[in-house]
Image (cartoon, rainbow, N blue to C red; front, side):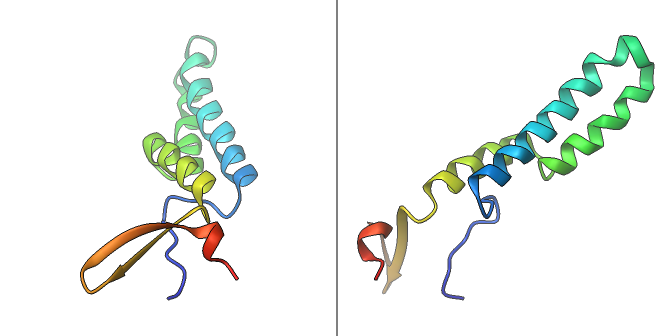
Length: 91
C-alpha cells in the first residue's frame, strides 16, 4: 500500500462538509423537534450518526485530516520517523 490514508479523512473537502451538515443537522433536528413531533423525531439521530460515521469527534478529526491531506507526509526508515512537506516531494 503506497498511500497512507487515514480512515477519518474523506476523498474531498466538499464531500466531508456535506456529511457534516447532514450529520449535525439531523442530530440537532432530532432534539429540537422533540416538543413538536415527540419521540418520533429521535429517528433522525441514527441518520445523523450514520452521516458522521458514528462519532462527531471523529468527523472533526477527519476534517483536519482532509484539509491537510497531501500537505504533510510521514516517512519511517529504520525506526526513525519524520514529517516532510508532501507538496515539495511530489514529482
